[in-house]
Image: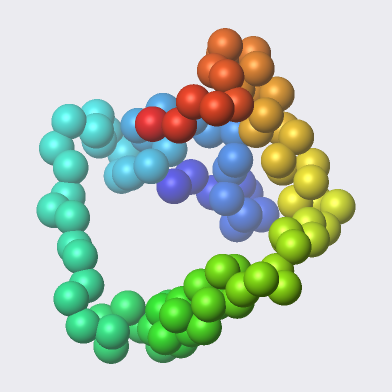
Length: 96
């Protein structure tokens, strides 16, 4: 990824060069790695993975009435819905 002079990621850089070393065209992809053991996820992800059964139980509980989104999450949801609307994707269609 490209970085600005300040060292931050350059978010306005798109194309294959934004996601790989200079000169990389994107034709050859690195092998995909799929962790098989919980410990291979790293500490934080493993911690999240261990909590999935508890979270799922809570979501399926009769007392769960829906999520509460923060203001930024609502903005992101609206932004993505607008993109879907502009490209003609209906809200009921699964994204691919």
